[in-house]
Amino acid sequence: MRVWVWICAAVAVVALSRDARADDHTVYVEAFGRGGLYGIGYDYQLTLRLSVGATVSAYRLYGQTVVTAAPYLGLYLLRGQRHGWFAQAGPQLAVVSADSPIAGWDGERRAGLGGELTSGWEYRDRVVIRTFATLTAGKGGVAPWAGASIGLEF
Image (cartoon, rainbow, N blue to C red):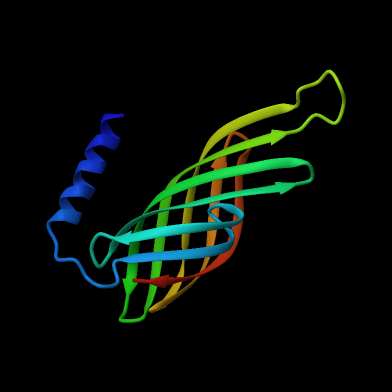
């Protein structure tokens, strides 16, 4: 817990110690990304190389409702004026619930916490386009995942 307090304090100091730019914020939609099948997300650029963000999603699939939240810390490994290679890491919280198909059973709800490591390519010029690969690790093991997102910076 103390580590997270120090990380949050460091992020706040970096964010408050720099001049704001017009394109620090990004909102995006993604398919097959950090949020699962699809999600919506937000990024904030702390510095030219460091960002924080989160992706959330909620969908229903095969009688189950899946809700996820995936905050992350992002780092640009290489960055040009419009293109960049990035890495993002953070936890993913998932809640899965199933309705009862029969009387006398209330259904079930399970929650889990895992970790995700993502790396990919980005094009950024008011429109932000990303393609990426993700490794998701949790109670069930490690699984690869790939996706794409599109958004707007402001």
